[in-house]
Image (cartoon, helix red, strand yellow):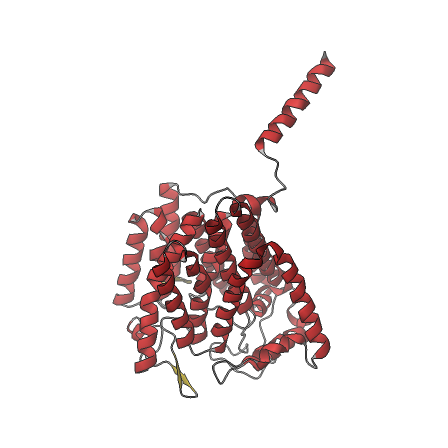
Length: 446
């Protein structure tokens, strides 16, 4: 980490200590977004990135100021903890056990740390909108840098180190990536934040328009099909707000549509993604074929993952002699920890979607604006879930997954904890039940 990057991290850490809790997300967003992920401080076997340093400062802040996450421990928290535990446990099934354990400790630390911070920072619908405003502040300068990168074919973030000074050019199109490890991941962050910033539409119309423009610019300037589809999926999820009362029907429609495609297509239905090329030169067929290869080689990885996937596909990656290019976050979970880790991650997403539905339902009777703010979190989560089919988050973009999950876990602790808004009796009913039981007991004694 050079002097410029160190200065930015120190500035963000200092701001994280002194700002009010409602402004806590901003230094985290800036630090985790603007400093390339692979920069950091080496402390023995541990690589302390900007994300990890800011998480440590944030946790110290929470403890010292007693800004504990609201609602106590809920089921989303517990499923995420089980996911992290299995991620660590399966390191013993892989070669060079100390190295996989250290690597997985870093993954678990990033995930749980960011999740806990945003469980603390976002505890109401108003604070969701606060998170959206701060996302706008963080993303607008990034969109201008990516525009500059597109025009000049020079990446300004190269002054930090960790990213090259010349972006990728494919079929004459400049694929701007900013501080991220790949243009697709930069565009994915814009797509994830696009639904979130729309939560400002009624209360801060200008900020919403600026945020939407910035997110769309980031998506377009990445010149990648994946982020464009991700943004469209987020807009589709926002559109479903009009039909939220019948959302469960859409789930069955989706299942029926998939079965129908599987019946009429020669290839498996998921090969529909192979036909998508919105930016030119897309590798969508490779992504579909990788899913098929994962099924074909299921006996190799189903229990606890695998250390070798080079024979799955023909694409060679520079970072490992043993692996092919894994372009799916779900398959990456399987490689790390087998089917259990993959299913646990899907369970995390499922619990989060359930929390969004319950919280939006509860808030709808009192404030449609607040309910819509919660819905935008669910729409961002939908982008994350869809994008995971064709993208493996391997840099600071993964923090946005757990930012959204943390915000969801905090604003709906009661529904997520209970599993259903109706499964918990009101306190008055409980008290009446206790009084009636005590009366019957005294009557028997008499």
